[in-house]
Every structure is written in structure tokens, then in C-alpha cells.
Amino acid sequence: MKPIIINDRNAERIMKEFSDIQGKATARTVDSFEQLLKIVKEIDVRLYGIPKAALEGTSVIYNFSQQFPNSYKFTPESTHFSLLYSKGSWRITTISRGFCPNRYNNGYPYALKLSDSAKDAVLKLYT
Image (tube, rainbow, N blue to C red; front, side, top):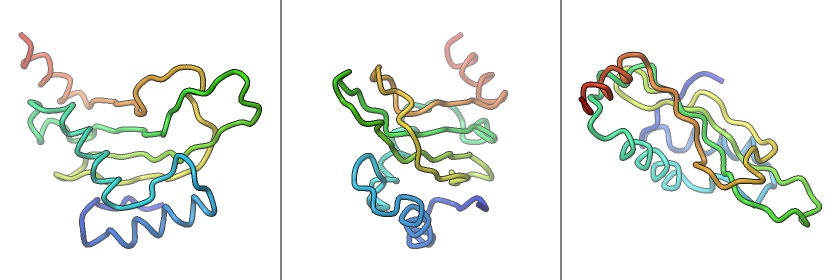
């Protein structure tokens, strides 16, 4: 998949990609462009204070993690997607559907990998 810039102009294209991957799935899915924007905004809030220029190359792997009881007999699946901050905006680089990686714990639903410049900005922010 070619990276897609997350903006209103690409909303229909992005949601078509999600729809194609998710198929008939109804649980732990991305159902609207507004939901995606809310997720991106949540990530931006967590990165508050880091200059946008320093975020270049920062990536996020998002999944709809959820805690399940041991008695749950099925293997739960969720939608996963990757984001990359490049040239001043977030871009979706991959979308997939697979097993819930956090079945037994309820951690954050995403893994954040800061670029070296973002790491330096965080150190400057807190020293």
C-alpha cells in the first residue's frame, strides 16, 4: 500500500482501504474517518511539546487492544494500522486485520517509535 496522507481530501480513499481490509468484521474496527481523526488527535496530544519538525520519521502501530476473559473461547481479531509522520503530516502506511496482540492485558492500543530528532526534543523538554 502506498502511504496516504490523512486529510479530508483522502477521507473516502482511506475509508475504502479500511472497508476492503475489514470486510464483514463488526468488532474492533475503524468505522468512520472521524474515528481515525480522533485516534490521530490522541497521538498528537501525547506528543504535545515536541516540535512538528522533530517528529519527522516517527511511526505508530495502532491496534484495537482489548482485555478478554480466559473463558473467551474464540481468538479475537482487530484492525491494525501503521502511521508515519512525514513531510508535516501523518500518513497511513499499512492496514491489516489480525489477532488482538493485547488479549491478556489492557495496555495502550498503540506502539510509538520516536525518531532520533523526536527523542532529542523530548530530552530537551524535560531537562
